[in-house]
Length: 134
Image 1: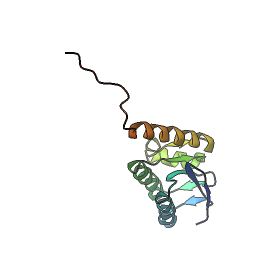
Image 2 (image 1 turned 135 degrees about the horizontal axis):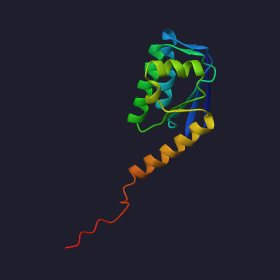
Image 3 (image 1 turned 180 degrees about the horizontal axis):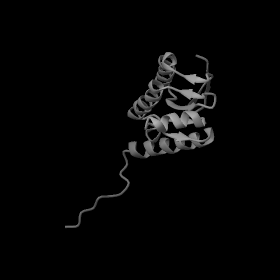
Image 4 (image 1 turned 60 degrees about the vertical axis):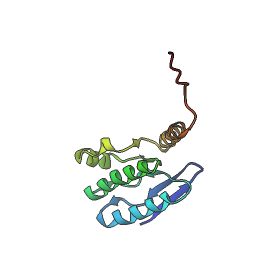
């Protein structure tokens, strides 16, 4: 499968150059996504602008990959989803489980916000002093 890869400082954008995400491409897509999870820049934006169709297996794969990324303290955002793909995910009741934005620029914003949230949660400094009056 042809996948355009664009790596930035905080994330990598993967843009599959296929019309249909089907069973035979699910494994390849998983491999490409997991490869990037091993790198320093773990956050992924999956740009689906070229994809016109998706089958159930690939749809479920996207949900499981996103969960895996969040378990690893990394972001996984899907952008530029075509109407037919969005309808299929809605029909499978998977759309609400995915982190989806209309544009790649909005996906960047989400990743930056999630990075800040993770930094704040990982910060060892207490956000307030816990004084007990006694």
